[in-house]
Image 1 (cartoon, rainbow, N blue to C red):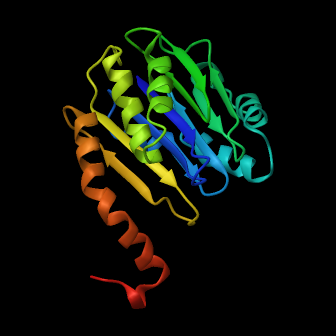
Image 2 (image 1 turned 180 degrees about the vertical axis):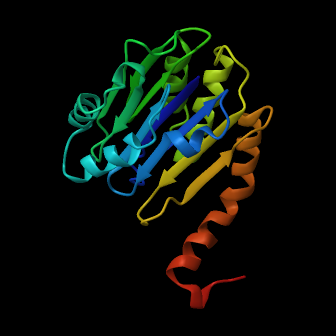
Length: 217
């Protein structure tokens, strides 16, 4: 009941996940990033524990493919899971279990990967990857949102979307972007609007953490 994209920006070193679903509060369960390490998306009857577990494995210098293999091997519910992992070198790996909700599809691009389940058609992930590539001049956050919007234009999910979110990590120990629309009609429009509000404030929030004595409030 979800489609998502994981990505890495070679220019900034940022890692990000963007996700949307007909389920509420999807980003709280499915989007995981860590600075300098990578990103994980876990969906389709998801086990949220797989997100931090995958990031911990990436910290031990495992590749994206190795992490997916280990997560799948250790998960008795792997037939119902859909996973995406991108590692510190921008390598991606994916898993879709045999019992994932149809229609399932996935696509891999340069520095990104997209996947979904309960999709209107199997072209949705490729449309997301293409949109991400076409927006190469934008920030990672903007590119991720544009990818979700492209997936929706391609057909999106067979059910009405209710939630969406984006998480991006840079060089801090905390995500510099962690925006969520947890239960709303037109969640992608709401997420894009929220990003436009948050984007100009972001540098200030980062600088407050690093140098509160010089913060402008």
